[in-house]
Image (spheres, rainbow, N blue to C red):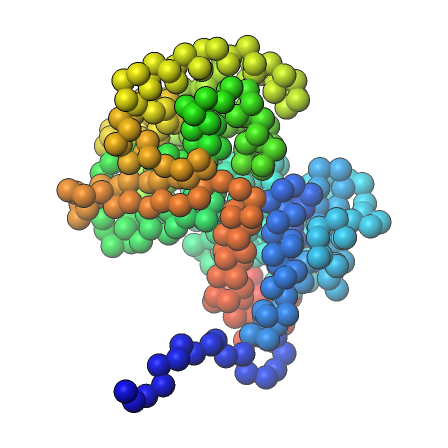
Length: 387
């Protein structure tokens, strides 16, 4: 045998000043925000050896924010809150607009205010990397504005973490669309939290306990009612269909909530959880009925080519969506080419660490891409001058 068969390790970037792009983190005290900050801190030295410096220059939480253009300590996001200014997220975003140099806003919130501000941030030349579904799943007009502003070239918009946590769902649908391939049908489990809850109920756990456990593990939205309403899945389904080129509004989706509408109006998460035991018997009976007919419960999102819906179904145990492990997501697409055997994507679909890793991947794509490179070519001029 001849030749060296060892796999080469990625070499460091050539010597010189690293490309420096500021990062402003909204939602720094939430589970995903904390996980993202820890990941970014852990990768700092390795990224620098490869010619990239991503200082955390701003952090925001619901009750205040802090900014330091030189960079905040961020082995964890709370490190950066010493001396934080009290104030609204609007003040934080205004400070972001005043930043001199390339900047990426990383949105790990569930904030409508940040989502609503994102199109204007893009137009100002600030890149947006988000796990917040309220932007891409808002009105179709907002979706179009986000993507039009990003396409115009001022700054990129990345939202891979909004669907499937770390799964390449949107990248796959985007690639299909680029090559002119239609998404004919979609069938999916898009909520790792509901997957975990229904799997636990099917295996004998009380519904209320299953929800509380999923929330304690960081697998639900901050308010679990956003999962049990079906709205989290509805948003993901909207995003996937829009990425596939379908101009869908929320009103066109039929969604079945897992608890009554009256309870969903309770916006105190703790009070909401305390009310859930009253539904344990109904869910136990539903799971037992499914089991007697050899079926398992799953919250299924579907587009049949005409109608889009999301609802609880009792699926045969042999169904690919019924065999998922707790917390797992799966998307099955039929297209012009994949018309006999669906194109399938599966993997973990919940958890702050998985979501944060996908946010970091989007950030690195932005920083290493043409938008980040143009600042090298322009010698570090201000963002406003180069936008």
